[in-house]
Length: 148
Image 1: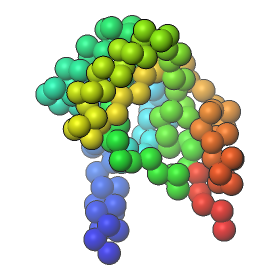
Image 2 (image 1 turned 180 degrees about the horizontal axis):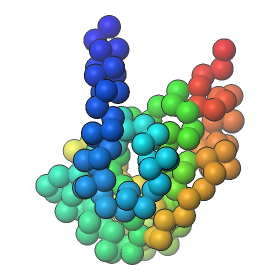
Image 3 (image 1 turned 180 degrees about the vertical axis):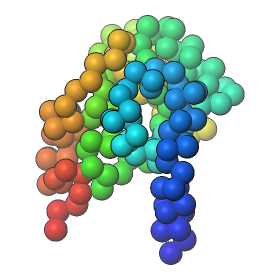
Image 4 (image 1 turned 90 degrees about the horizontal axis):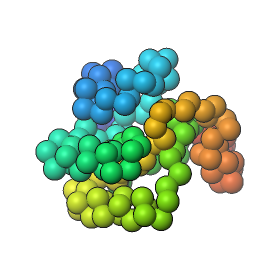
């Protein structure tokens, strides 16, 4: 019962949250509004303090974009098109870049935050052709909903 109230209250604030997130993570301005405002905000973290510093430093180190996610949230019941990773191409990382990501995640993981790296410049992709679509299909999920 409490979870439903929290989810409803959060849904009413999605646009406001997503607007604040764009202020904190500027590369998100490159995602068209029609896609961006459909994203599931429950999985994102607005970076502040040490997390914000780590995110921006890592963007410079990798020369790619970095997004902050809640470590404990990835909802397979959410339609594919509502996931950022199904709409924006992830960045291929060299072993050196992967090691840098892992070092920065030593800072963010204890705070419940994961870092995901996206290609710079942004490349939009069809969610139905994303790696996430294949992940959903392997698990018998269709369009991000549980099979009935």
